[in-house]
Length: 222
Image 1: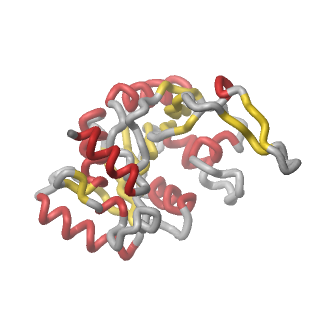
Image 2 (image 1 turned 90 degrees about the vertical axis):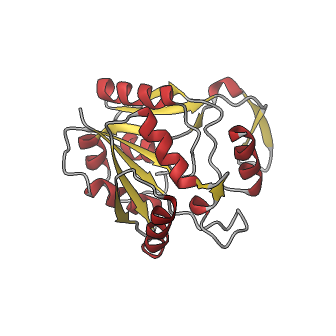
């Protein structure tokens, strides 16, 4: 089946404390977003890319592409007011519903190639697959009574991207009206009663949103 990546990059850099949108911040000489796309292409060289950006960031991306001689073919789509609408806009750009689509955060440049391949394989077999890792810290939860109590961390998963699906399934899911419970693509699909398969992720697959994350990313490259 043909493979697509919908890369969502709508960050503004507020938590990073930067005037530059976080996806365009340079990480050892290359914008984070470009590193992310290159890693995905290495994992699935035959795939096609849909890049969802805020309308006001598209010119900045075009400038960076020229400056960095970035040669990965990417179709640009303007995002919406929310991540839900941005993903929907990206999906609307895919005409081939008999395919696979992986939705990935633009600021996750360290996803393991094997994780990407496993997500595509499981999505083709079962319809929907997402990468997860287990927490290593102890976990406590709010019991809604003004207290927090210990919780078995072996029952917890930390969810990553790319979240991968049969394209027809994800397109159908995104025809639903938005609900506050839609925290990611998997939750949108699960609202239709579809089971989502879990795939082991990799701990390096961090989402770079703060200066601390950026320092960790630099160490991972070094």
